[in-house]
Image (cartoon, rainbow, N blue to C red; front, side, top):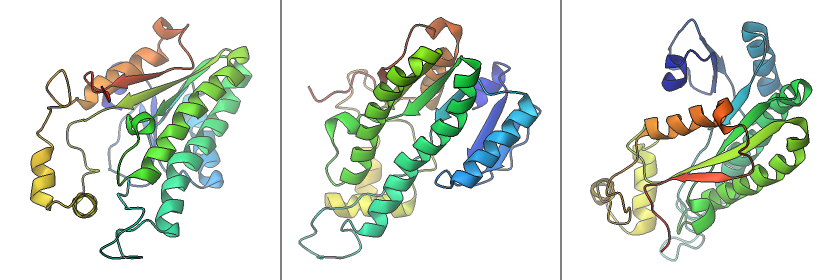
Amino acid sequence: MDELLELGVNVANFDIVDNGEQHEYLLFQKVDVTSREQVEAAVVATVERFGTIDAVVNNAGINIPRLLIDLKDPYGKYELDDATFDKIIMINQKGLYLVSQAVGRILVEKKNGVIINMASEAGLEGSERQSAYAATKAAVYSYTRSWAKELGKHNVRVVGIAPGIMEATGLRTLAYEEALGYTRGKTVDEIRAGYASTSTTPLGRSGKLSEVADLVAYYISDRASYITGITTNVAGGKTRG
């Protein structure tokens, strides 16, 4: 978001949490992306503020590590249950669909624009003990390809970005680390120590959020005007092989 603001782009930030940031070119809207009413109202407010919408970045997402079967504690706290499954699906898939549809109506009408979907390497490779999350990100790849075919005739591009191991963010909460540690048989301290390991990344370091933002800026620019239907890894060369 900051990188786009620095480029002089008007930004509407839809989030469930208000970080208090105010800016002449920034419109914050408190939005639950699983609510059609809230999404559509926020889109209307954005158009009223800035006149139109040219691009959307579907970045809302959640990951709750869970085991499919927990032999140590069947039906316990860290075994996948319906409520956890539904929450992950609702945010990562339904939220993406609702925002894309609401903004997509504007882009199709003006016959110009781009939808950018945040996927994950886990969507292609799978992720042990994080199967529900990985499955939603696999769906993002398919939505990206399918919507690119569907909306291309209206000059609307749809692309994806799949970050790899990135620098620390606020998403690494204690609850997340405890769940990840339990499902992997490690302590929280061991999980935190593992963040520094880059042995599986050929470039030998974690990615920077600014490097993802740079790709977003490129995708929404006219320099990417003939690129659609693909998802690009920002992962330092990290793959299964």
